[in-house]
Amino acid sequence: MGYIQFGPSWGGALLFGYGSKEHMRITKTGLIGIGTEKPEAFLNVVNSQVTNINVLKVDFSGGHVGITNESAAIFRLTSNSGFRPLMSLNGKVVVTADGKVGIGTTKPEEILTIASNSPNVIIKSNAEFGLNGL
Image: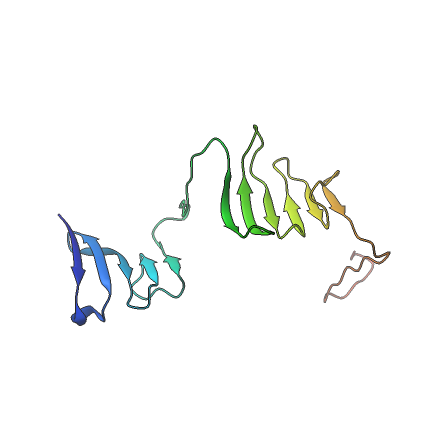
């Protein structure tokens, strides 16, 4: 049987569980923990027993899912007009459904497209280079 517990003996947290196992809690500061008694973020999901777990599953035919504001998406998954998901980090890095990566462009033309008004591209490595290196 499921349960909901609340009270001062749990540090002011609201607990949700089934049987004797707690599954979710909301702390007095508003942090939500699923699979953890000590959430460290607004939503903290922990599952050490399953290697492949869907933390978020959304079924939709159009629209957007993600963290965004009206002027620029910080992180957005998009599925409209038959397109597969698009990841956009404030328009600076884009990964398209067909695996193309764009830096400085939202429409990469090749597997990696870097667009900039600067004539310089810098690739850094801390590795030592030799005859068999890069």
